[in-house]
Amino acid sequence: MKNNGNKLWENSYEKFQNVCSPLRNRSLFEWLSNAYQFLYLSSVDKQYIPTLVDLKTSLCIIDVAIDDACDNAEMIKKMGGEEFTYGILGLAYNIDKLMNDRHQRDFKISNEYGAEYYSVLHDIMENTISTLKTLPRFNEFKHEFIMAMRRVCHSMEFSYLINKGESVYPSSHIVENRSASTMVTVHSLLDLMASPTVNKKDIGKMIPLFHMADTVAMLGNTLNTWPREILEKDYSSPVLALALEKGLVGFDEFYNSKPEEIEKKLSPLSDIIEELIDAKLNEMRSHISNNNIQSFDAIKYVENYLKIKEAFKNRERYWEKPCIA
Image (tube, rainbow, N blue to C red; front, side, top):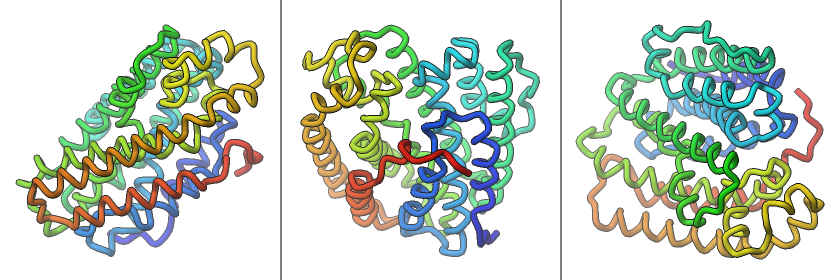
């Protein structure tokens, strides 16, 4: 199946913009769509690249929808609190039921805003899954995909519990539990579904590498988004967690200080995040040297995430742009 446009993700965003946080600008997803033009495994059949770009961007809209339901305090309050958060988590966690047309659309969220958000996400997920099923090796890797989606949900739930409790966790624990949030493993499994020559017996060597790339992408994204996370009071951000751990700020300052004042205090921490990224990239290289992954060019895979680190650093603050369609 060839896809010569971006109709899936654009349709997904058209629905999502009616319910999403104003911080979630269309330019974010345009940037991601452009990044996915080169973020794919070397084993992918090139005719599927447009479809994969479209799918990955639509999945990112789903990812953002779950993320905001778990760590955007103002949105959670508006949408109905814990009932809303766990309704959204349940929808995503049970993606296997959506795949098999067994999911109940009529889940009841009593808050009208939360109910609309749930309905929109349900529609986006249904449409995305329909396209996902067209990939030639979907059935071979669908169970790994479901497991990867559940890792994303666990990551988001962890974020929700941290923000709800306002507890200081070691930043290393935050990184470990939040790494799946950028969906790299999910996206890499999509690539496998479009790779005719990949040997599935290599999956045990590939998944650990994908998980390491998850961490690189999550930390790289953090280099760009942590000022926004000050606005959202998202304490599961590695930068905010590091600042709390080191005593640079306290929880009360996120309520009583100006965001720009907090940002000034936290700006030196970006160097520590970069060091963590470089360490994880070296871990990926070590994994490759110790494992014979023949199904795709694993070195190129690492190089792609070295590029994305720089791209994240240089990305504009999309949340400061006017939120237009």
